[in-house]
Image (cartoon, rainbow, N blue to C red; front, side, top):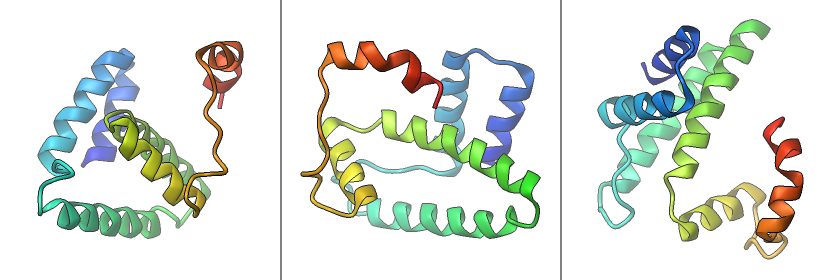
Length: 122
């Protein structure tokens, strides 16, 4: 439901802020992730992982479905990542890179601004 809502909003051409509000609303309704101090967080994350893998299998039948799934998941990931605090973002990056994060380099605001246009095309 979340991915379909994202796709429908994009098809309507909603503005980025409206899309963000929509993603927030549908995530709270269908895919809530509790605060990191909540004991139910693990269960929320487990459900999120299971749904991701089930949908990944379902949408792997054709290249077109696979691309559609990745586009919607990318938007959902960007939203969820942007909602994290700095400590949680660093933990996610460490998990993604499979290490303690020591190989990741923090860049300055000036460096970010220098490469911002290139980064936004990714």
